[in-house]
Amino acid sequence: MPEAVFPEGTQLLEVIVPARKLFSLAERLKSDPILAFDYLISQTAVDFTTKFTVVCHLDSVKFRHMLVLKTELTDRENPVVDSLTALYPTAEFFEREIFDLFGIRFNNHPNLKRLFLEDDYGFPLRKDFRDEINIIER
Amino acid sequence: MGVIKSMKDEDFGDNESLELLKTSGNNFFLTSIDSLLNWGRSNSVWPLTFATSCCGIEMMAAGASRHDFARFGIEVYRASPRQADVIVVAGTIVHKMVPILKRLYDQMPDPKYVIAMGACAVSGGPFFYNSYSVVRGVDHVIPVDVYIPGCPPRPEALLYGVMQLQRKIKGESFTNPADQTDRLL
Image (cartoon, rainbow over all chains, first blue to last red; front, side, top):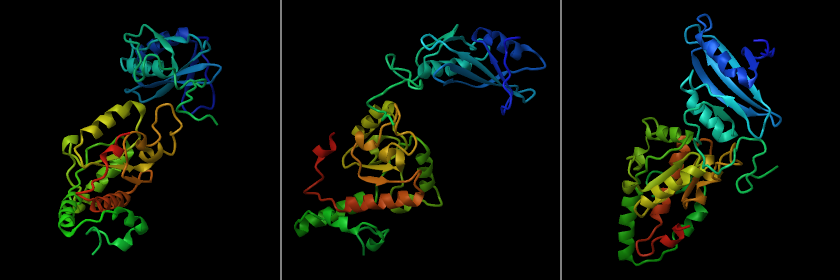
């Protein structure tokens, strides 16, 4: 996969791939018998104001090795990435939480609706989220 | 002999405020009923099983054998608010929890008391009070009788808070009960 970037000096091995390649790479990582990344430990997102980064921690129960799979989304208005639910059923709730708090949408997700907050609430973990009632700006 | 049996008056740190609790002047007959009622109420304060975060672990530790607050009569955790006398708000209250907490409080029979345990229940917490989701202190929702600071408070601090509550109950009067309207927010 030529587009993949491997940052150096990280605690765990990291791979940054374009959003359109995320699902196919995860599929290969899971199905390859010598990699066997069969466990999605966590899936979350980070808002760097210029981009969103979706972070997936993969683990192999068989070999006990870990990999951090990242993808960067530069479109703030309409951030979209493929869902990993077909590979890892646990991703359904991780992705619903990311959608709830960051507003990142996931293609092919079976039940993409808000997990905690009301439908008309903003996305509170975005850096440009403003809540004048509850948050004091400093 | 102090106001409550389990702790001497001089061991409390705020005895000047005790005079505020003794404002009711009744005749001998009624004060005897008062003292009997208050004796019973203050020595059987049943808490509601309600804990929203790590302070709840400390509250369980206070109930377990080493600290054992059954010694002071707040023994029986009640799973139903209908049977509880005190709600120990042990932990962060978020906005989604507010209607549930309010309903639990409303379902408790009078006389009912509230202990705000820990920094989150007192003021929203040391870390995340400035947040979209956290209520800055449970006294925005229900009236609080005793505040226990700490993050989380040690079981000794919870026991001290419970004894303060017992002392407050001992200061109540049957003929002049705490005005229930000021409990409505």
